Image (tube, rainbow, N blue to C red; front, side, top):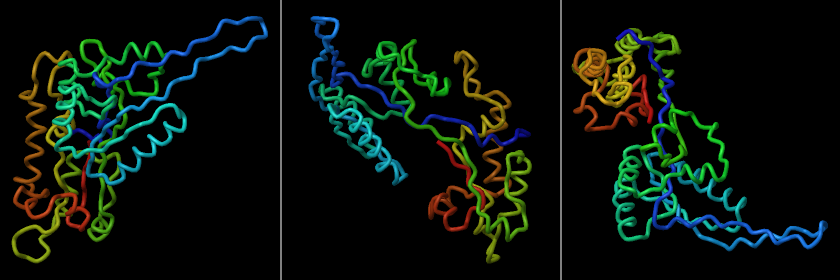
Length: 290
């Protein structure tokens, strides 16, 4: 692995999709015919409507407040619309959506991850947003095209990205300072990363096991991507997980724990997860992303 670490890879976390069943049709304004050139245009009043919006809880305790603020701002801008906003546990979320859809009580809008959205698009459980995007002249230029493409199915746009995040590297300044090492920067390549992690890994009490680790492991796809590999070819017709670049990426991930011993093992993580180990000063570099 000679690739520079791309800790700026953009990946979608959540997409907002409209579900069939409870979606209220748009209310069209009607204009009264002008009696004279000076007559004022009269627009029919828009009837109040309530929509149900659901999302899921995550490890981020700030999510609930942030999404509630968005709902509040929307209702100020659209006082004729009341938003019934609900946050549900992620473990039960997809099952609840399926149950609502089957019973004809689906919410109007829901947060979905990529796997959820593609399954629901394939089964006709969510609607194609393209007709509404076209009718409203909605400008999609604010979105990265790659994030829009991820939520398409057979030419339909079944969701819009509500949030995305980068892969980033947190690091403990004190551990770097104690070791006399420079802080990571955007020039760090894989070899430098592993070498730095080795210097930061410590057996602090001499019992033969490491109490402080140089790093932790990300989810497996990132190591393949770091090495320039992808899970499928360009038109997604062939799986490329056995290509050498992908295999080398997976091996680099495994080596962090089994060969270089700079990342905690499953046994180490059984007692405490890696995020809390990082918070407690037991992991020096913590890569994290969606």
